[in-house]
Image 1 (cartoon, rainbow, N blue to C red):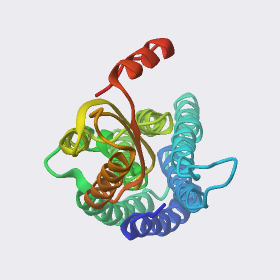
Image 2 (tube, rainbow, N blue to C red):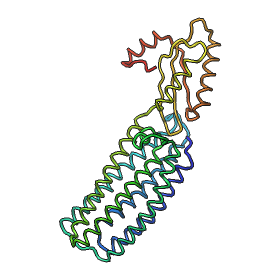
Image 3 (spheres, one colour):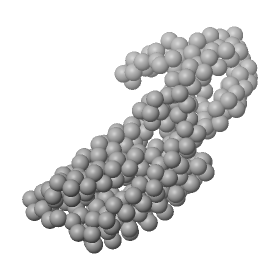
Image 4 (cartoon, rainbow, N blue to C red):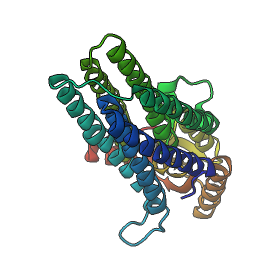
Length: 319
């Protein structure tokens, strides 16, 4: 399964940026005693690990097919994306909530607050640069005129939109931490630093929930986009000798690894050789127009037989 170079580049850029930012934040949190800064440091460290897991997912997904996995290992990418979402929620949000509650129950004024402001400002620059990089890649990968939520739902490559949403959450968290530190100092209310940490935890929890929902949908099997399905239907119906399209089913095994199964009813006067010729031509046409379709299975079946089989299986034709 091929992955675009932009996906890897976005992940490596995010990994390097988050690692540098995490080290800086941990130093600032140790020096100032800021709860929200510690939450942000843990957030950046988790994001660094998440990018590593995405790279693991890409590498494992590229392994060749085996007897036990005849369609390859492409779905592993979606599994590791789901693991990333769990880590953001379980570790990132959990630790942020814990730190926030602890600081609210036992508030301590931060020291060397100027260090916090400098680190947060530099972090915003780093995170903002990676965010813009991921945004450009996401638009290039096919956002088009779709809305953001729709574009993520349609996308079958979780690597780019995962980094984009992680960095969006990071920028929101940095803004909250910055505001929490300012208010805690100006109002002489160190408890607000703990409140900021809890807000950061909420941001991480919402981000994790959205990513988990999208990766779960991909992991359990998504078909091609509706416009692609409509085009495949038109191709099948336009093929010589096809009287009826029984059904079309598709499944993404990876961002660029799609299986398409088509059942068609040919004219009864066609010979086996003619049917083979039409099937081969239709398969070539589909793969030429949609290179992501790596496997095409075309079945010649009488419509009434197909209906009977669908009823026995408890399903219905999807043509």
